[in-house]
Amino acid sequence: MSRLLAALLAAFLAQFAGAARARRPEVRLDPRVELSAALHLLASAPRRPLPGFRDDGGAYARLLSSATAAERGHPAVAAYARAFARPTPGGYSFMTPAHELRRCLDDSLRLRTDVPDCRRSSLAFAAADFAARTRFAALMPRLAALEARPLKALRRGRARADLQSVYEKYSGLKTVRQRIAPSPLLESGRVWNDYAAPEGGRPARILTVISPDVAGSSGPAVFSWGPVMTNVWHEQSHALLNAAADAADAADGPPPPGAPPSCYGSWTQCVREHVAQGTALRLVQIARRTGYPPDAPDAATNERLPWQALVADWLRDGYEGHRDRYKTLRDFVPVIVRRLRAQAALLPPRPGPPATEAQAGAAR
Image 1 (cartoon, one colour):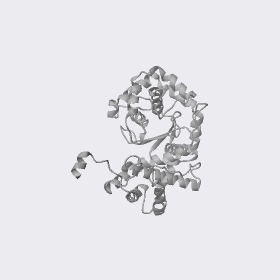
Image 2 (tube, rainbow, N blue to C red):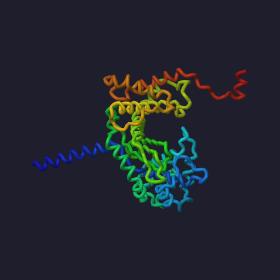
Image 3 (cartoon, rainbow, N blue to C red):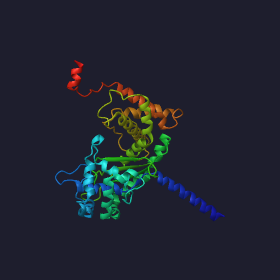
Image 4 (cartoon, rainbow, N blue to C red):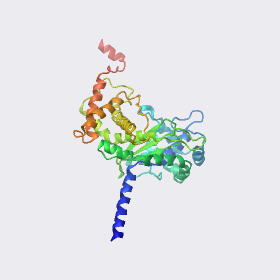
């Protein structure tokens, strides 16, 4: 009987531990991101490299290049360059092909047939063939071995702090599965976040790609845990709060005339980013005050978000002190949206485009 009870207890604890591990972000190289990096380097001209990923001359870049150089003329390289050239909001062109590969290839770099439009993606179709010809999936363990030390350091940071539990306790919402993917050749200072809604039988998930603080030309790249903390909370907010922000904004009418043009290209995205990054800022402020999670980054604001600090203040004063009124953070989002609109209304209206000759004649 005692052995049966011990076995049941062990099974329960194992299940609990598995759930806790599943809630914490996964930390690993993402094969689709690294395939993007390989195609990016092949598509770049030596004297005019494309921005985004760069060849730092280190062991990682040398291994990646040597494994793929024979396929420089593959159609996937030209397809990548075309996708990179598509105009995108905010100028993040390197996201466009990486996002397409993220959606349309699985972790084994095979084309996903459960997402109908992926079968019509020339980039995804060609990239899957490129990956097969270069045996790219088999290359990933060798690439990961070169980054074993920084990956271990990031996993230690994850072990010290259950970031998703912190978010769940603060927001009252269940978080989405998330992968942290350090990318050794991503230009320092860049972060790429990609939220994938439920699709083709797969659950909602988030990919956060971080760049190294120190490039790997003389050894493995060096990554910091601080930016990971901010981006986990930032992207969980997008996944869980964007729909509420959109609905509240639509209910309040057309965009205010004073919406700042520098704020992520559109009023809708401006609202989303204020909600998401304002929430992340508030959680960082709490972490720095309480000491948990440890190693919190500076509570810095984004210069493209003029009211981010105000959002953090509204959360502190209006949400945290009134949890009886707001059962979840989603319930407080309409308050944030109304206050953002009030701030935008204080700005002078944005000038419209210059009148054409026909419009000027009609006015006369």
